[in-house]
Length: 257
Ligand code: NAP
Image 1: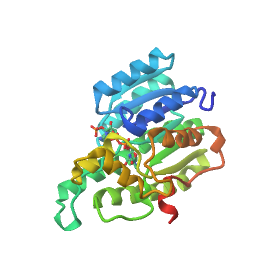
Image 2: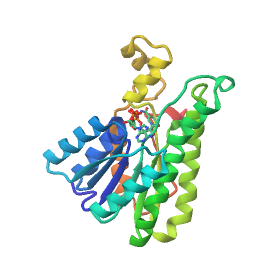
Image 3: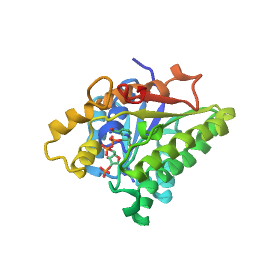
Image 4: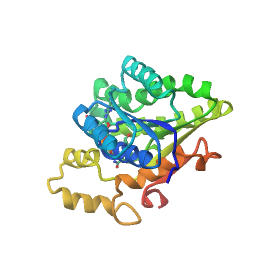
């Protein structure tokens, strides 16, 4: 209890999946939540659910690939809550699933726009307020595919590799300001993104596709959003005060082989 008490946390891509679980767990541990997403009905429903449970939460429509949208929302969060202590750069898309030689420039750019520029824009615009406060924790959702490769979704894997090293660069740049920056590397977690990825790979029976995907992990099954949310709570809290520039791998043993 109270592991994030009094902290204002921005979670991007908060309406569904991993982002939603992070927002709920951070709030349960005492944080105030700024929820950013493009899915307004799910985002507002989450805001209302959290308020009904006694938490401070507010939803903003934010497309993280638009710097104008990010800057305006961060300014409003600072005005509304008085600052930002934690940024969870979670919004992401899997994008087109084609081999490299068939991908158009627009298909490539769309994934980098959300997964890489989105992390850049949100980080850039929370940094002034964190630097003024002399503290902060930035948590970037990379992936197992920011550590190892796979023969599919090339723009996605490239984007997650970029996030892994953006994390280390910013950790080094802003350590002197008391700001920690770490990346989280989930294995397959059962969310709308993964269901979409399996359907776009041709799966017709999602239950058996999920079981097959689970076999890639040493523990024999895919994870659930809370498996990642608890790692995010740790990185958001002062329990991780000596951790920066690190890779928190939560992957059921996928990369242990
Ligand atoms: P998800 O179920 O698709 O949820 C992501 C949320 O982000 C959705 O609400 C999505 O809206 C939103 N979003 C997409 N583009 C956005 C934008 N431009 N601005 C603001 N919000 C946007 O995804 P997830 O599986 O929870 O994944 C969350 C993060 O974890 C991603 O960065 C992903 O790459 C990473 N990750 C996931 C897994 C996994 O197995 N699930 C594994 C490794 C890493 P739409 O539905 O409209 O796109």
